[in-house]
Picture 1 (spheres, rainbow, N blue to C red):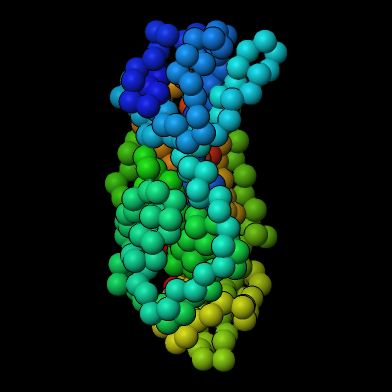
Picture 2 (picture 1 turned 90 degrees about the vertical axis):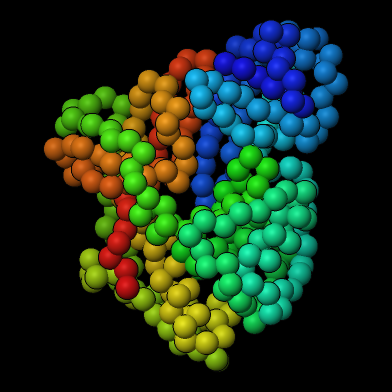
Length: 305
């Protein structure tokens, strides 16, 4: 394991006794928790809020993370760093008029001192008018991207918008084999979470989407989304329904350290149980010290139209 601080490898200068990285997607940011025994060695580097850290191990990188806090605990020092800098927590009111989604993401990223990127999303989608209600830039983007069936991920200094359908269509990064009695796995299915459909109604538009495998569920009507035409209303209904129904099935898998597991990566599960099939990683925890990994996956959904 290598610990980089402001671009300098300080692994040999500090005594790391714990290092856990949490790689997540959708409305949250990545974080790392590091515990050190020799606080004096750490303080030689004069740490400041938003200083840049990075941990690498066996080809895996956390990407750049921003120092959030240094806390004394039980005779050690606990360091918390996140994939978002402190500027991302600034909450403001703002309006976006006649702007395409790529420009909105770029403007919000620049506000945080970050770059931006879009994957699987039409960069030319244009909004007549959007209102930001005293939200931080990432929180605002997460809300809008959910309507588009996408998630926001802060990754290596970039605010990155990723289409869920795009990620689901990627080739599986690896296949995980799970037996019926395998320790460290937990499968949860909640069909009652699924909606049969969503309709968005506004004074200007009406559009909807349905999940053909959830006809038993409720059909909800939303009137508080500012869709300006039927195409936008239907697209948003589809995006919101996808984000909702994909949470109905989740699988948690614990294993030895696996650097190939990252959030929003497609995984195939080979199993004689109901967990068999295609999944998308929602979050993963890598314990670099204990050399363990634990991932939470959400079932790929392709039944919404």
